[in-house]
Image (tube, rainbow, N blue to C red):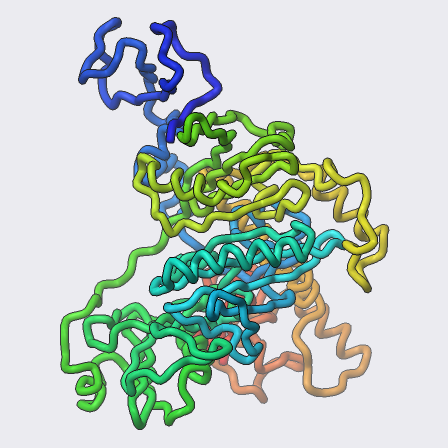
Length: 574
């Protein structure tokens, strides 16, 4: 594979037809003019890069890249991942947000699953949709609506133990489905263990990956009596459970594990897990085992627990470092094949206008590889192989399991369009066809309003490398912020009946805020009239609430209920 850019090359001897120019970066002081250095030819491009002004092409030569923090930026500010409630409406009207989060919606659409059996697809019972097997391949068709149109994503999930014939059958069956749906399927190739966020979300936290091969119609075959499962995630949109070798070295103090034996299912809580993880594990355990459940805390395991794992053994116990948000800017390449060699020409400052119907374009967002197929492109069947070749030969040593997404012209999902400065969703279609309009879809005026919002919404601070990107995404994601504010304006619900005068009096008191001494460490009967004992902290003034809890009311009520109760107990509001 050869990489090129649209920038002109310096004067050089005319190359042979097979020769392709590539840019080479020299780290350190450049050689004197005219000096080849290190055996490079005299016409090699030398690019001088200033500290703090590195290009996207330069950054992608490294496995990781950390930006310098400004003096005014607090440590742990924009890098830390903050989990907030997903607001689906914002994903529909703000494609740049969907692109950053890799989520077209919250996963509440229609899901169909097929398992590859004897090189043919067999439907999987909806009761077992989230149960995948490492020895098989699956097709997962997700149907959702956006801007009044039906859209599709077809996930091609490949188990680690699947055979080459099964993988080939997976691709051929995907092509058949795509033909059935008139070429409207966005196809995303997913490797076991590298599932994208939206794939996890459609199974609502109940995705379980077993190590053996599935039997008839996706049912599991007989397995060993002792099995160990690793539960990872904090909510229904990011949780998955994978079977791991049943030995003590597989444990990790930061997570939760399910140990299934002949007579009991142990729910093992590592010292570093939190309440959200524990809640999700209790949901998953019902999917894996119907046996008696026994909760075990790390350090308090019964002898039978270690016997089932073959004895004690060292396992990771250090606190896991916070995950950092990738900071690589997306790059767009025009793909072509010359004498059997993949050639990529980079398009800088790209826009929708750079997508031509005769071309195949590769969009690298680091976490995913998109291959855009123009309607008149002639080599689209080679697209997936080109994406794999790109990952294999990337100088930063990219993971070959990086998801590869095939996108056809006119069927672009928001996770793709959001990486463009502006996007006209109807550039290639003059009007909606009758078959694309969803029954019971919003009124025309509402649809036009959403379309206008998307077309006119300028993405001025979109890239992960931009200092404001993380903050913009998180602010936009504060789930149902308007409804939360309305709830705060209405005040907490009361169990009794009030007269109109008492309601007015209470509202006036809330607006002014009660003194902390009237609410803290008080019995229910000693609270001021009209105060709901279950939400007494609400009646504090905003400034007192911030001073006592260290956060705003909005931030507090967006937390999990168990965490709210925990803080209220500690601070005397329970």
